[in-house]
Length: 248
Length: 228
Image (tube, chains in turn red, cyan):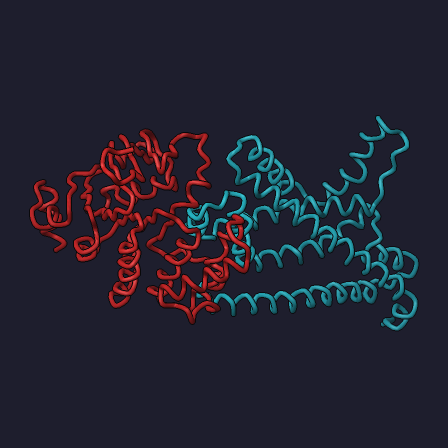
């Protein structure tokens, strides 16, 4: 337990990750507390997506420790599938299952993992679709939807397992500009409801508005972190200044 | 031309042979599909021993003619078994189906593997991120999509298996070519008899192609709806 009142949800200690001989993460430390919205920004190749993907072990960790809700996921004995049930993930490329309807996409995990009966999962799916503004699309196939709609379904799918952490890996980077807003709106609502969120993003406006804290990553490490005001209005590190000059 | 003679004399025989061809093909394809799935999963497994076994299996089956395999299964292996069980007799149908099945299995394993590799990695990542185990991810998410990618190659393999049954005439399995050979052996009406046999194959494979076109069209429609 941390000394502050909020519970620590994610504790990352000295995280290293190699792809072959290439060191992508060079000792990352981070603590994310319950209900916090953390945006990770930085140039491409800085390791921010890899960092995010380590948090639910989609990438194996080379060394270091990641503790989620008191479960050490870097410990081989931890049942990673159980931990993942509480961590929703949204991908840049949506990754909806193309051979299932929107409703089936959302129902699949809760039913397969026996979290809900079929009836409960169906009810939940329709509820979630309503919530992301796609109530009428339950019977559609992913291919019939626009990118923005697909990403909203992907968020609904991740929420179906009732996770208490949501990871977003550049959720709007593959979208046409006019669809970015609808996805960010859903994410803002989630943030307002107190979801713990880690968001890798290029949407500086979103980070500034929604994040409690911004991590700036470069060259495999967290170079600077702080509130959006600190990072965007008064960056201390030269690389942060340089990056923001280019993107803002 | 003596087609009418062949029709009246040999048709019941040939149809019996054709029945054997169809049954042997169907059974072998079904068994081969199961063998192929196991070999494919072994070949994609992280376990090096399983991978090696699958690799050797595919290597041997693809690297030797089916004719020779049939001879080994029907004549060779029974000889070995007889050392232990002197009364053992091999049976042409069983040997034929075994040969066809292990053969189809090797090729189907590679077809499945191609299909599995064609499923984007993001699909299994999405399933794993929801908490599905590796095997559930395979069964629920990857294999159904892989199957769709594999349909054209699967149909091709079915056609090959049906035609390959004719090779089994060398071990005396009473499929359509074998009964035709027996008939012409005493009547010498080669052209007519073998033409009828060829047409019989053509008919069966045409039926298969119609079915497969139908399936492909159906899947394509779904694909269109689901955008790839």
